[in-house]
Length: 311
Image 1 (cartoon, rainbow, N blue to C red):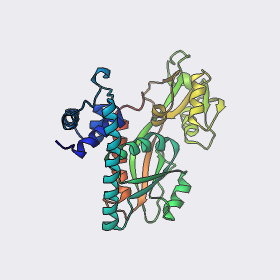
Image 2: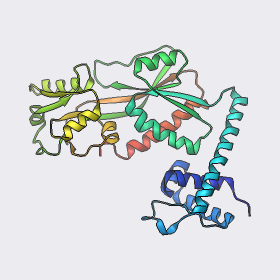
Image 3: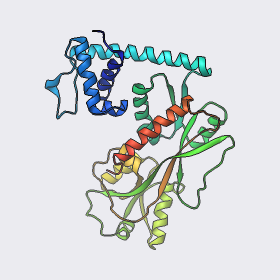
Image 4: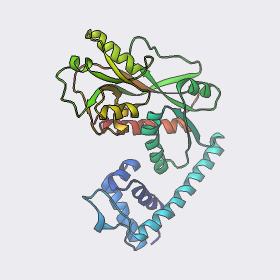
């Protein structure tokens, strides 16, 4: 009985993701479907490929020595299929299936990286280059043809209208809220007024989070106490965790950085929100490399945000 190369790719996905359920999600299959493929692959290879004595609660999967060997061979199969797909694209569209994606650190780390991990399983023919840039740099690169997609941000208030760039189109990717965080060392504040009157870890005056804090203080007629000022969210959360003040951070940051010692203030107060956007050329077709990347990015973003970003 010959080995089905597609089942080898299923084994590869299980090895890369570490579990049947995660592989099923990446491959758009059911967990039972993945398990059936693995069982048939074991029959075809006439070798045990899964170490079933090491499974914890049916979630984590470890491969046997034979399973690891075949998973490595599956990498060769995936590479060959990817090269065949790239060649077909070159012949069909005259393109190499390459996309250059730019953006700011949090979006790249928490959304683009898992997108690349997904693409390694589902679209190995797509070559992706990641470039960390600010918005001005990114727009200039888009206009020069040196970038395909740019992940940016728009803050939802009356003072920041969306910019318009000829030949480029901006779409919404994800809308998130900002949260007030305070040290776990503190007693739980009884009101937002109590928090606002306390000590704060904030950002420079030109940053949106500082402007959100000042707006809230103005609404409640409270003079804020700025004790610490920093530009990086990681520094801010470290100071909050140490008990040195409260702060304002977005959902993505809370999910992406370590938050030990940090509590989220539960309140109906609208602190602020922002929209993560994707900007690209109006000329891209649905089958182009940027659009293939964008489709997977949207899928991964939906999965990540649905899992609960606020913790």
